[in-house]
Length: 230
Image (tube, rainbow, N blue to C red; front, side, top):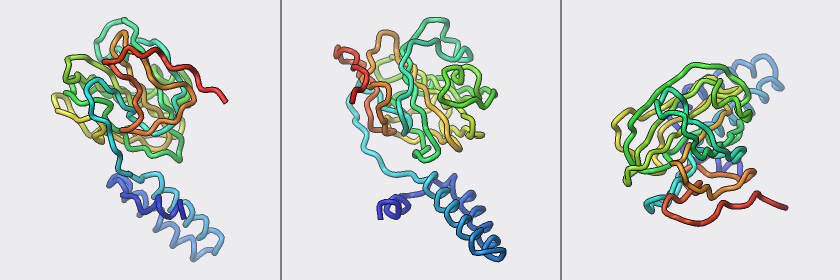
């Protein structure tokens, strides 16, 4: 019942053509054998599940940075933002959220503000849970300035299975926290580079919900959260 309810969530328009192709192949497979047809049906249902686009409730208080992706927080470190953005070599706190093929893949804006830069770079398709994927893989990088003049970077990173990074926003566009800004097909990662000195409010291993989970509070003095324990 839960799986059926999830499939009733809105489907992102980007998914319709893929679901249609899977469904058409399923019909053909049924002409060959019932087993192959049933396999195609399962894959068609999975495709619809992959492109689901559920509504989210985003906290709107100034200073909050919400997760751009559903998935698991697999890295929290200090790193230099993508060089194509021209931000220099200063290290920033970076939170990485890894999406597997069963997560929602619609990406949401972490803060309200203005997109100052939007740059795409071709690259490899290493497993997105590797640290070096941040530098080596295909990616789409956005530099966003929030309403207080602070800048952060959100990067969509292709993975081992993901072969297409889609970004729906452009430079100088005004955006709102929780707004849909992109999608990655099929399994990937999102990195958020916070302003220098920002303190993260999530832990490695924590499940993040796009548009809802608070990664950091730029107006808070709360200490760094401990690693998750049993």
